[in-house]
Length: 113
Length: 113
Image 1 (cartoon, rainbow over the protein chains, first blue to last red):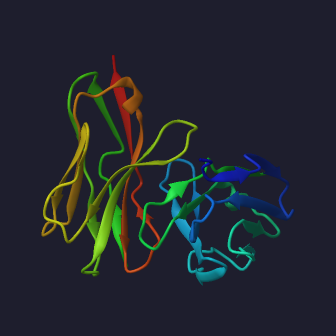
Image 2: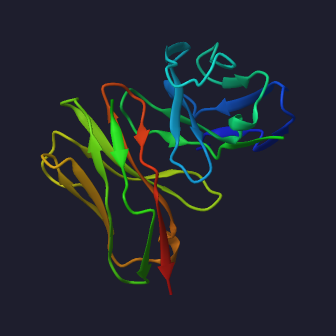
């Protein structure tokens, strides 16, 4: 079956622009996660959803970052007024149930110039 | 706070040989899970192996096995009969208390023909 997909795969934004990153989880997966991976580093947790409920947003680095999953499937990560330090790969993952394996998407590489 | 430490930024191994990647972690949770993920260059992160902390038996998946030392909070990955396709970044990750994964900084594995 289809895996986790993310779009766009690459995004270049000028500093100050708003961006929206999309994640399509595996169909039927209850949990959805966003991670940020800086160059040469391990992924760092941003936020996660169980169905449409955002249960933990403790990893969002500032109030410029906002995530939603309104119908419990597709999720969007929005970054307002992008800064150079936002440049990273943004990974989405989904899992079938609590504490099951997380399946990762290919990521969106965001470059802020 | 939960932490994961991978002290080997890079490792190399000859094809068909065995290599061990190190990982130590810290958590105050009594129930948790440990993972090794593989991230090939420009490709998606995939799960290599998973270990439940309450299980004393070390997990194995074909050529991949772990040495889980709970008291020492150590979780190393052994790759036997290394293949060229094993070349990748390997991340150790911890999941405890909540569903989010806490990752180490990764070990870059090179396989020499």
